Image (cartoon, rainbow over all chains, first blue to last red; front, side, top):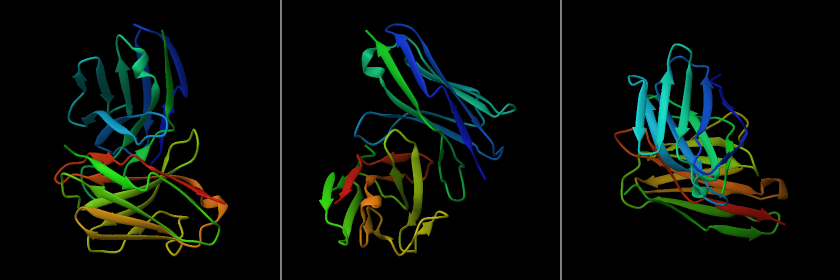
Length: 113
Length: 115
């Protein structure tokens, strides 16, 4: 079945540095890739998403890139701030059918002040 | 926009009792809602997909008689954990899909503790 691998599992960066989280999916039919931020004890919050007809998308300090050939997609956070500290999840899905998400295993990001 | 609420946020119950969790989309209609379970420091595990007016579709390994799902309207889905046991203790999260679109908007979660 569909599988999404996510790396690294933990990431510590200094405030102001960049953070990169990578995901790899197995089902080449996947065509929608959202990223979620989850703070402790809360539900995940959508921060950015990308569809398979686009290679890159940016929203202020956050960007996502997609390589369909390699089945990789990555989250880039620039100028990190302490409030970026959280667990980040990638997911792969489809724009039709069940619309189910297959989540990655999560990355715990810690931004050190 | 796209706000999803869950009630209750926390519940503690005795073993053998049933617990109902509500998931509501507050400002949009959700044809499809999803129920997830999350263990500490783990990813979200999809339990079932709930479509308004029809039976839920359960993922492999999830007992449908244990976890009853009802999606009676376009803004409300409920998950009932029947005859709860300590191993059912977990963080339960719902999401709602906006129509049209792919985005799932998540509720704040419900922490269930079964004594």
